[in-house]
Each structure stands twice: as C-alpha cells, then as structure tokens.
Image (cartoon, rainbow, N blue to C red; front, side):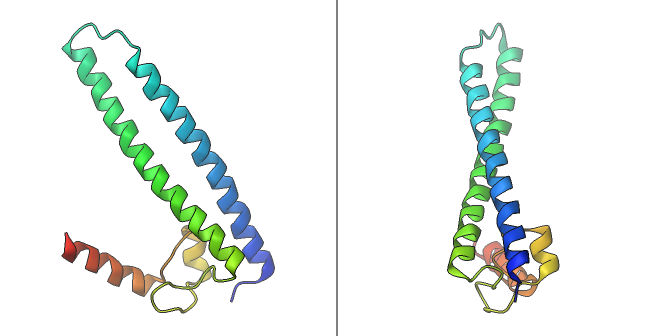
Length: 121
C-alpha cells in the first residue's frame, strides 16, 4: 500500500503533468489555427503543411488520451484506490508507478491486456 506522502507526491506529479498537457493542447490548437491562415504558394508548401498538421493531430490525440488517464488516476486518488491493478486488484508496485504515474494495470496484467488488444484488432 502507498503511504500518504507517496500518494501526495503522485498527485502533485499528475497535476503538474496535467498543466503541461493543457498548455501543449492550447499551443497546438493555436498553431493549427495559424496553419489555416497561411498562404500556400505551391504543392510543396501544401504537402509540408499537411504533414505537419497530421503530426500535430496525432500528438493532440495522444495528449488527450494521456489527459484522460491522468484524470482517471486523480479520481482514483480521491477514492483511495490509486495504485491498485484494475484487473487483478493487487498493488501495481512503486517502480511501475514511478515510470508511468497513471498506470492502471500491474506488469503482468498489462501484458495480458495488450495481448488481448492485439488479438481483437
């Protein structure tokens, strides 16, 4: 079980990361708006702008996904269930949580979950 100090530390890390993602999302959205106003002189300009937009869109999707995971983890802290695997209900383990603060599964269950996802694709 995590101590109060560890929980508070994870909550602070999650809140800091949430602020960073919010800034990134706002910045990327402004950049995408700016791209729409650009005068594109030839197909090369258009191709470069399109590729950049696709990359920015992929980053936005990934960051929104991470933001959802962070919100879920913060909610779990409030409920007193943070750090518990959603599958086996065992503690996730401090080393894994240090690497991925919003981890939902222990290592074993994560591997099972990923295999199941690959099989359904």
